Image (cartoon, helix red, strand yellow):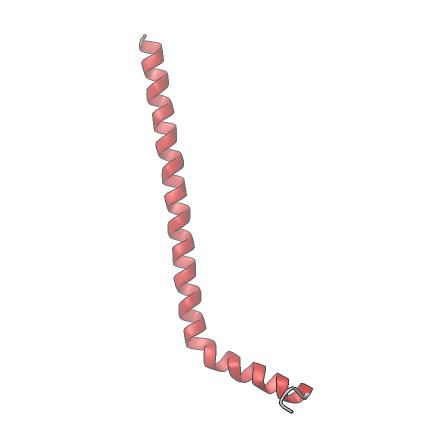
Length: 62
């Protein structure tokens, strides 16, 4: 009986740790998404100008 209870408690603890790991991965992905959005917002105009310049040199502006 005590052995079953200890096994159940250990299994429950492992499930909590797995759930915690998934939450951590979710937070990391959200942070990376925010950083990418901010970077694209700040650098978007410069990137657009570079691509327009390349397209003009390749004859895409005709």
